[in-house]
Image (cartoon, rainbow, N blue to C red; front, side, top):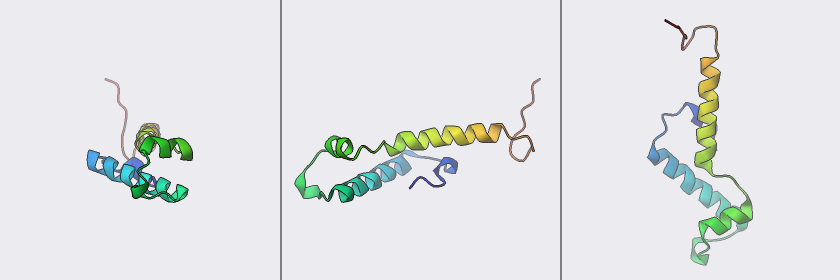
Length: 81
């Protein structure tokens, strides 16, 4: 679900859609419908799945670090004045 998200220009709309999709997947894992009215926190506790927004933020920082460490000069170059 997070494949390639580290390169997206992430907006709040993207984060909201990812969270909604994650909640739907967690409900499907537990075979729970919206009519059962089980809180998201309870579902998250049962599935023990981490929050998608935190994971995507971590992946974006890892990707940025990877790009900065490149030495072939394709994207960025670090110059100290």
